Structures are given as structure tokens and as C-alpha cells.
Image 1 (cartoon, rainbow, N blue to C red):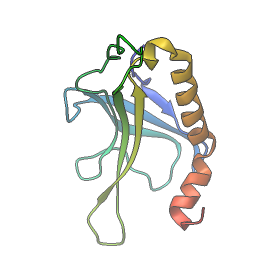
Image 2: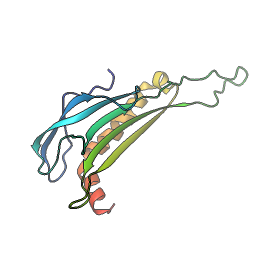
Image 3: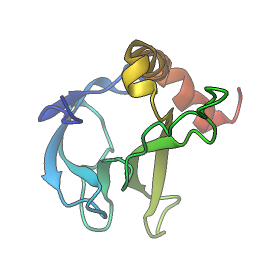
Image 4: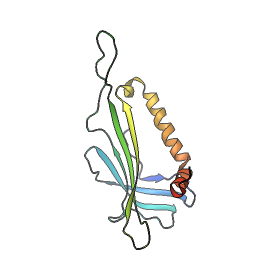
Length: 155
């Protein structure tokens, strides 16, 4: 199934937010190779957090490569495949927020770049799944610690 989050996404546990949920509404992506959702409503207790607006966007966008790469032919003598390209996918979350009192909103951005060597999608799809499972699982289970580091600068 392609990237298609549900209408409601449950946020990871982060100190200061209680049972956070986000209502997603289909939006227009900046490129034809992307799929975008605006966060139009919030659930749980998220005091001071805003849903998406023109001046303070809150969105989730997933991009696929404009041209999908395939595994090139192997050298007929050596059997070695050279110059294996990568298919690059991106998951971008944007959130408008104010840096200080009486200041204009700024947009914070989180970008996950996924680079899959051509051919791995068909030869070892289980490894692609494990890669993504580990990456997003680590992010999900450590969301509060990552938030603390982003606030304190302490790793």
C-alpha cells in the first residue's frame, strides 16, 4: 500500500503532551511527485499547539523520486554492476511557530531522507522494511528524548 496515513495520526509520547492526535486533511503538495496532508485538528492535551493555518502551517509531505531508478545491467564479462543509482524518498513535516513575543512565525522543518539503492526493492525487500522499521521505531520510541535534545541542545 502506498503512503497513505489515516485521517487521524496518534503522536508519539512526548513529555508535556497528553495522548496527542492529529487530524490529517488531504492538501496539495508542492510537486506532482509528492502527497501532502495538512494537520487541521488536534486531539488530546496539547496546550498552546496550533493546527495548520496560512501563517502557521502544520503539514506532512511525502515525496518519491521523479524518475524511479532500476538496477543497470551487469558487465557481461565480470558480472559486476557498476554505478548503482539510488531512489531518494523524503518525508517532511513542517510546523509554524513563533520564536519570541511579537515576532512573525517561522517554519520548523523535520526531514527524513530515505535512499534505497536500485534493485534492493526487489532483491531484498525485507531489508528495506527492516531499515524503515528500525528508523521510525527509534524515532517513535525516542520522540520525547529527541524533543528534549532539540530544546536543551544536550545530547
